[in-house]
Length: 434
Ligand SMILES: [Zn+2]
Image 1 (spheres, rainbow, N blue to C red):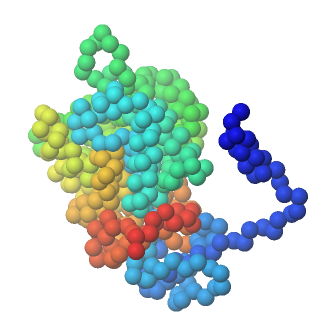
Image 2 (image 1 turned 180 degrees about the horizontal axis):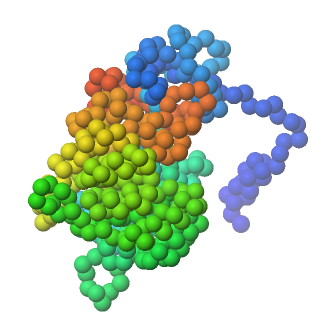
Image 3 (image 1 turned 90 degrees about the vertical axis):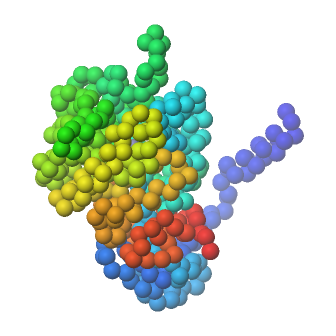
């Protein structure tokens, strides 16, 4: 036994055995955030010179003026605008950009899952630094349930990162999802769990839930082309029988289901089957928008990634992605006018994590939202999608102390949301740029 090992035992020993004398409970640490302006996430009007009292990781109360409390820490955000922690409802921390099939295949075929998980921990840390205190991560793209592990490491304080809801492997039918196009004589890894038949769907839902996923994710369509008249057509993946069984099993087990549905048939089948959110929705027929409003199905448009990948995919031979940008913008605007609940989601990971996903806000505004609506899509509306409206999404007493700050008023200039310089999650400060 080396001497160092002996010292280690001593240290562990002194920490492991309780003191004989009872210790007084540690005093609650109180932090005040002194905000120049504040949007609470409920009202579209800013309050000026507001403080937030934070204790035990939660928002205790809000007040006006200068806080007076002996022993409390005061964080001076008097030149900043405080906001609820932002929520990105569509991310992939285990993906590091996939403009082309080659970008994707390198990650699936050349990187091990442990290496991808290391990159994923950095992506999670970046998400938090951008101001996203909560994310819904919608599948690992071939990295198994590594998202469940990243979530666990964050929740137990091993690594910094946002609060996560995760979906594990996602599902698609046999032969519909990469890695595709290589020798039929070889078996290739897949970015999804291949699932066929209604009973196969139920079994996969049970398996994924037992492995710790919060959400079930399905890919409902693929292979896009523009019909005359501007309708985006697709090949639906699952049959209605399969999709209904997956939705029914997920809901029976009190889990929600997100559907990648980019075009006509995928969206229609998904809303008929009763999924909880439509992801991407480049094209949604008016009748399906009406059904989404009636059933309370959320739309997570992911506008930025569509623009980000369009030219690269066109250069690789798929020109349809350029046409899809304009179709997407028009669909977003129709959904907004129809009163569909729109939650903020970016598909970060579909573009590199070095790019700030908050660029999505400017596109939401470009295509019809007011800055206040855009902010709400990433706060209260996204919190409702996640079923966490009682805990996050607004600055109110009793909620988790998830607070971010930006240098200027985001309702005057929504790109301020790309400049988050203060991040608090669960009452702990993770970023402060003076
Ligand atoms: Zn995605």
